[in-house]
Image (cartoon, rainbow, N blue to C red; front, side, top):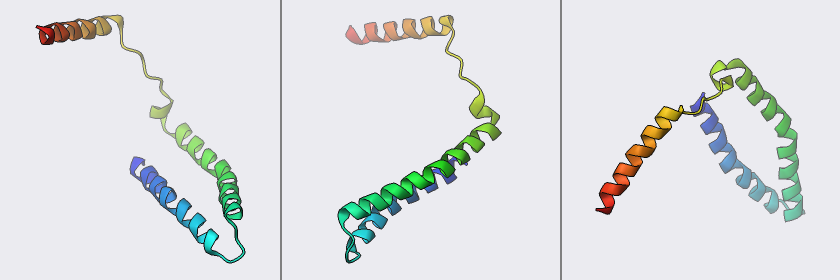
Length: 91
């Protein structure tokens, strides 16, 4: 799933500027018109993208579980190790 999302992201990162560049070379198409066209496409595709991501979120229970913060004991242990390392490097 993560690989597919990265592929889609990469394609859109490359295709967006490419399409905008193609629109600018069309005779009679100004840069402003190209910008507005790409903005309109982004606006139109926002709703389906949101709905698909919401569907993925709802279907995968791992995404809905909240991460618990580390306990106080683990945090104190990390801080004491950090202090020892800093003290040893300063010597």
